[in-house]
Length: 427
Ligand code: AMP
Ligand code: GLY
Image 1 (tube, helix red, strand yellow):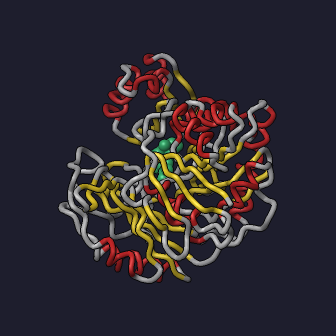
Image 2: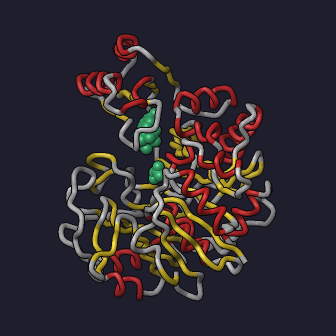
């Protein structure tokens, strides 16, 4: 019998905790710091969830907690603690953790590292140049055609990328990056080739050079319907995405396998989810970015499809063989994010959320909490992305109907969401 610790407090972590609590081997799932949803029985005979008041970046506190409780496995949601060395701190104490060490986590934390690794491994990606001086970056942008793609090399919480054909906006962005608008993230700037095509998120559960691919997902990143407006952390997701036959295997062969091999060859073998953010171009899949973790909100749509036991899969990975057993999945799922008024800009907190129980009572529906807290016995908003309402069914169409039926039961002041999640629209 096993106890698990999930690190993080968003919708992805609620979905991870819920899925892990469904394992016959798991008796308790701790979530640090969790949210209002990661408390109590996880439903249908699942193990109980319990919040732990430790921040995701309190590496020592988390390691002490895991050691003190005899936690059998720690699963890390967000990238920042991985980039800060959480997995190294846990390994130093002999604690089992699913997530890459600091060096391997650079695949997300440093775009320059990721790009150089892809070139070395022959992984298809946008052509790129890296600049450490503002004048050189600006001069280069004069030479190459629009649209321009400019990225901070370091972690910038999703705010370090601009895709634009407005020269003035691009110049201002480059200057802002070098002026340290993103702190350390601005020391190095990447300018890359613009790629067109639909996007796809592929998650490999990986250990060394062994991996299994989870059902491919699509993330809807823009705030408004039709893929318009500013980028967000993600306003919804669909899984699986219907792909041409052989395409997912091709991603495994051309993207995941050579990347894992190159990391191992550098002496930084990978353990965790390797998330490839891809563009499906006319020349084939090309990597936009790698992440060192599960995606949010894609995870909320992917995990409900698993028939296999997630705890076993992640433990097999920790033991070096994520491919020890075939992965079983079924059906389709669609996640709709309900956001606070003003998100992705400034938003209020503390708005009372109603209708959660009604929504959860619908068949094939899961409500994963993200920015929620409990106050005076009620669930209130505590973040920009508040909930991910997930419909699961045999087909994507039915999953969509279920998800939106559940969305209609939930209310809070100023709540907004996209109505086109699951449709063909790009973005
Ligand atoms: P990233 O954080 O690198 O995934 O970039 C965020 C978003 O910007 C992606 O999901 C794409 O929609 C867009 N983007 C990034 N790089 C490119 C590129 N080379 N060509 C076209 N769009 C891009
Ligand atoms: N859904 C995008 C991300 O998790 O980075």
